[in-house]
Image (cartoon, rainbow, N blue to C red; front, side, top):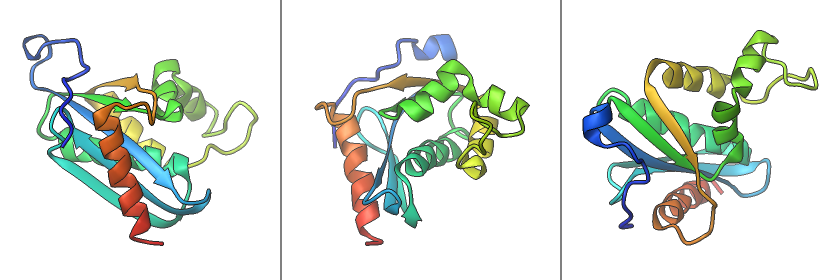
Amino acid sequence: MPDNPSLFSASANDLGDVVTVFTDGACSGNPGPGGWGWAVSPDGSPSGAGSEANTTNQRMELAAVLEALRALTPEYSAVHVVSDSTYVVNCFRDGWWKKWKRNGWKNSKREPVANVDLWEPLIELVTTNEISFEWVKGHSGNPMNDFVDELAVAAAQQVE
């Protein structure tokens, strides 16, 4: 398992029981067989992974975060999510989801927002828990990011 210190700057004394989780999605073709994975830093445990037969990379990125939060929020008072998905991180950093909801789940082009079935429960978890997000460059040698990428790719290969 990877050995990487937590990237969250606040101490447990500041926020209570804090956990850092890395997430990733993968897709063979877009659409195609896909997988998602998550793992808690610094040692990769606990972790989770899953797959869908016909999906997209963005959907798998979302599924990774959603499933990680579903698993971790009952136990931890704060979760710091580290993802290489600008789609996910920027949505929360820039508040895209607030505009989408206000506009009846339409994007700036007045088209339906993709993956609403994942966005809605994810937004619920983010807004009712202490969740923070951080972007990390993918495939850049970060041991935890590489590990969750391996989990996601392996899960996608299970359905190919």
